[in-house]
Length: 143
Image 1 (spheres, rainbow, N blue to C red):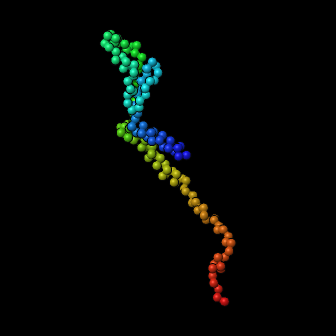
Image 2: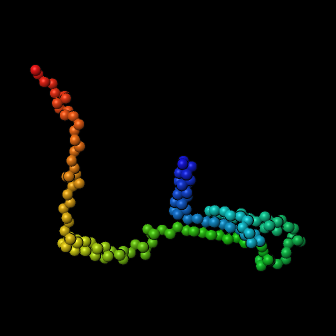
């Protein structure tokens, strides 16, 4: 049970962290397969790219071959949208609806549907019968 609570706590903590700060995921595809995945940054360099850089100048291709390149980097960024600072969200367009609802509640409902007086639930309560007469047992009689 403690393990389940810790897992739930960790999941909720990560959810709050990601929603309050945003998320950046770097993906590196090599030959159509995902070779590297990194959170909060760019993906690491591909070993194939390092091999191309390590070649001597006589073995390097003459023209850049971007079309034949098997490696591809993708960056996925999820940014936080702050509603409190959004100017469109601060416009109070629904304010007249709240006023209308308050007027209907104050005038219509209170005039045409008066509140019924409710009897307390304990008014019909009867106490349980006493098994022994306790005052008689406690008293001392002078004879």
